[in-house]
Amino acid sequence: GQQVMQIPQYQHVQEGEDFTTYCNSSTTLSNIQWYKQRPGGHPVFLIQLVKSGEVKKQKRLTFQFGEAKKNSSLHITATQTTDVGTYFCAAHAGKSTFGDGTTLTVKP
Amino acid sequence: EPEVTQTPSHQVTQMGQEVILRCVPISNHLYFYWYRQILGQKVEFLVSFYNNEISEKSEIFDDQFSVERPDGSNFTLKIRSTKLEDSAMYFCASSLRAGEGDTQYFGPGTRLTVL
Image (tube, rainbow over all chains, first blue to last red; front, side, top):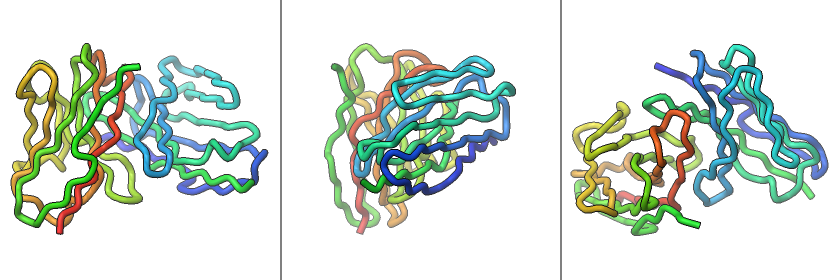
């Protein structure tokens, strides 16, 4: 079945440093979605990527979809303490498959 | 802004008991989902539901689980005979269109504790 792998599992940064999480699929994806889950909270949709090589930006967040549509990344520039949480990628194709998530902690 | 609601927020039950987790999806949404998240682990898909029937289900969703849309607003997940390993956060989600390519809005979750 479809597998979605995400690295790193944990990332601890100093406030102001950049952060990147990577998502890799065993199969070509039609689309990929990114979610953020704050500690004790529920997943919240951030963005969806559909096109090969697509890049989307949301303020300090940059999302990329690989040319082969098998990998994706989320990059946060100049992290802030409000960025803490776990970032999941997810592939929805019939069944939904979430990555393991990358938990970001930010030291002020 | 419309949101998915879930009740109860926390359910404690004895092993072997039946539990029903309730969800009210966003009113004009047509696709409904249940996920679970064991503490500290990733979100796992359980089942998707459309047009009053199951669209997809995972291997986790065995005969102990069932879903129902008993009326025009509620969407329920029933676990017939709970096991200790069913302890987890259960999230309901809904989307306007099919899961592939559409945003899923998650509810706040029900924390199920099986003793």
